[in-house]
Length: 382
Image 1 (cartoon, rainbow, N blue to C red):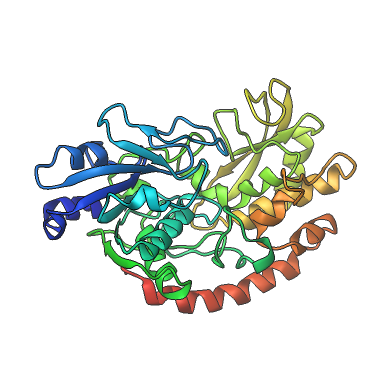
Image 2: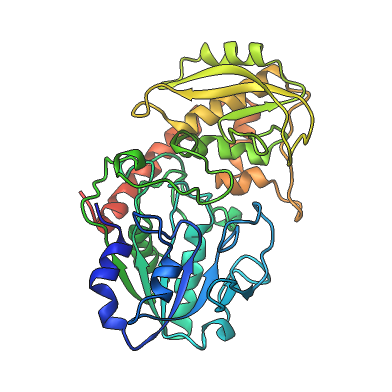
């Protein structure tokens, strides 16, 4: 298969030969030989690269989740490297004034909580505002482009982990999302999407022949990506989602949990495609730093059967059932429940405490039917 980057470097760049290019990218912007998009552009005789822009975690991926990144001069190219996860998340007029075209090349992971897709939306907004062209170089959805899960984000809980009304697992590539953002949500910039060749909607990342470059420090492997749609929700609780371990979003636990007891409880639910195994771990940072936690590792035994959101919520309900006096939802610095921002609704928090999420999933199914009708209009691949 060929990435959007490959196609652009073969022929697409010719349309923009005399124009000043700004590149929104990070360590995932690489070709199939792991040459970086930054180097490929910077060393190309007919591409005039003049500025870099980095998302959460920075251009080189050395910042932790939520950590502010400062603008700087890139050590390798000596170009300005503007941060879109620092003082501002929207490109300012000053950041855009010396470019004619913005190229976006980053790997998404297929879940709506991931902030890179909203960085793309804000860049599209800035391109429209400052009359710049926008080019998105498409990359695979690592968890394929068929299955969808979840609800659409409600207006009163929109944030940078859920900015637009799309489901938790959206089943789209970043290029398809760009078209949807433009036509459905008002990000009406002068947009070009460079599609891939020979990617199909049923392909997982390990079927592409591409090497996996983690888009952030905790996006370790394909199993983690598949589970993330459900287990990311634990970020809004006092349960460790495994950050600071070798298995983030696969290991879930806390000091007050009995791992053996929890694993048995979860496995009795007979979740499709998943088994829980008791584990003990000590996170090296984040929640329970240096403390011994017990919990479970979620093992995927059939990825075609896994419903990651149902898996995550079933595990969450199990912990509430077993440890009602220890479990808590946590608030962010603005006094809002972070879980609500991830869940895209305030109601789910109450449903979980009442062990009553069946109605939530029924509503999800209705919303997904409507979303699928819209989604199909922007499919670039079969």
